[in-house]
Each structure stands twice: as structure tokens, then as C-alpha cells.
Length: 74
Image (cartoon, rainbow, N blue to C red; front, side, top):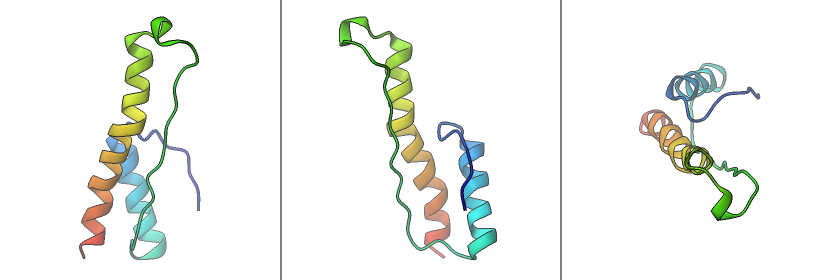
């Protein structure tokens, strides 16, 4: 099973976890690894470049665990 989502959007994460439960019936474990950055030196990076990395690496993992944990506790 695979699908394209935006891990920085809570509604995408929620839908993916629900689809996983619908297809497989349960969720025993999860691996939430993602990351990206824009090329360039730190002095050339914009605040938006930094926010991209933070949203992917931190927010995406937080949102994923938030919705996955609800099913893992069942």
C-alpha cells in the first residue's frame, strides 16, 4: 500500500492512518522518518527554507504519532 500525502497537513495524516486501519484492521507499529532541506549554505538560507525542514522533520513526525498512537492503544 502506498499513497502520496503531505506530512505537514494533519488532515492528510489522519486520512492515511484511517486508510491503514481500514485495509489492515490494526496498527502495531510505525516508522516515521522524513526530512529535506534546500541546498545552500546557512547564510543563504531563508526563514522559509528553515521552516520547510522543521515542518517535515518535527511537525510531520508529531502529527503522525498523534494519530497512530490512538490506534496502538486499542
